Image (cartoon, rainbow, N blue to C red; front, top):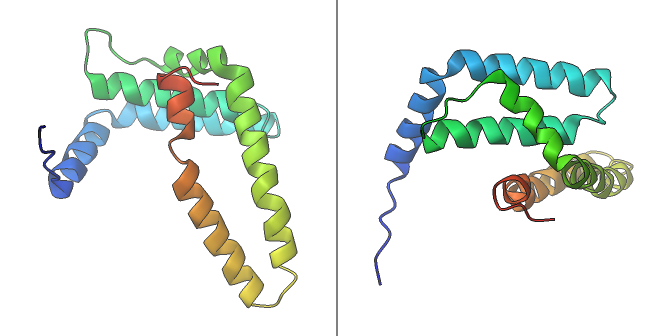
Length: 135
């Protein structure tokens, strides 16, 4: 069995270099995604996130194809899965957070902890939907 070498510093450097080298396309795609998501009251948030993931994966794979702004709209190929994921995630976080926020200070702290923990648990779910075509 091969041992996997963990080199966190190098991974962060590689990620920063990837972002720095593709700053223009990433910022422009992010602005378009934010504007369209906000203009549709979040309905397009899932497909826009899926499109950003497609751009990121294409930049990371560094294949023959170059990432383009148009790749952002390929996220619509995953419309239903990404839309449902965002809706369910939002509801599952909003309801307990709203209940917890009734409790002064401790409730707000518990709500923030809940959201950070849920974000850590679910941050790769959209990557699995997009990259591995999971439902």
